[in-house]
Length: 405
Image 1 (spheres, rainbow, N blue to C red):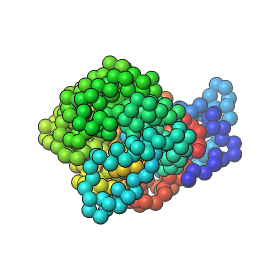
Image 2: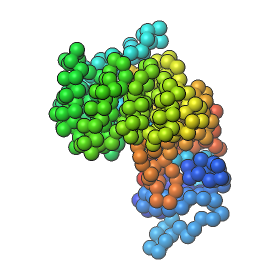
Image 3: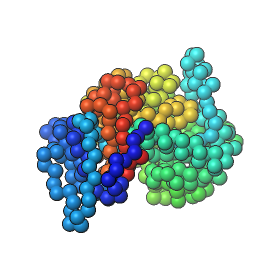
Image 4: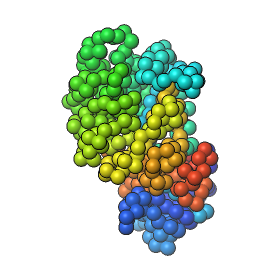
């Protein structure tokens, strides 16, 4: 958990975070995508980064208004941008621990388990859903996540999908409409009729709360043609496009995402050479979700293959009750390094700047003038320790928009 702000630091004013042993700015320099600065400092004013660089070059901090400057000593520790978790499903009811235990006993994961959560979510009250959501948000913040996306998708009817979007919008601007998660149980055998509902009345009701539209383009969920229809309907409503794809096997999700200009395609576990080439030629980010593979015993995505092809890669938690019930972005970094061929620097970049790219944000995921002052102080001398010491609570302090907590 984070410590309280030291006496004399005005959370809405000006402070200097100094004596930073290793600062990850994500402002690329001399071949270093992480923009690493040693013996560094960060100057914050009114929730934004004013300056970041060597501690010996700190500019006049007070400014023309003569504001008192609070001083925060990092004690030689590392500072990174707040994690940007660009793929979560945090609004849901119920629990699927028994399903997890069955998988660990040898049962294969399939998308059908989503319907279990749909039933529990539909029957939960707003207050019950809100209480769970806020508990998960506290977990996320305590582990260094300062920006996150939240999807609907556990309602699958107009009323509940709208409720989920409204609750998500209470805590984040990054709300994604995922009515096309799977076909609702009452539409079994009538997938096209369900797509009519998703692209029509359901989208109309949810769109005022959402920034994005998403679809699970996968065998057992939605075909490429059905997916395109939902995505284009969302685009017509002014929503950005995201895609779940290539999670359970080879399929058309990545190709659809690249062709429609999606901000991201998420999972990317099973990709052909043609899929990789299409992503490399597009602006679509490949968001990898190693918590899913950890929890389902599927093969991990090959991040090295994507990076070497020039694809932009993000890491996210996919926090959900079925296939990845973890809110830990540090765990995603450790898994990406251990299992997916990424270096610690690449993994930290993907979990911060990469997530920002997946959300098409320039104000988060970096520590640079004008960016939001979303900062994480690690109880470690370098970012490498996030992978080197997996499972250890290394997040010492967190600032969101310059406010600690």
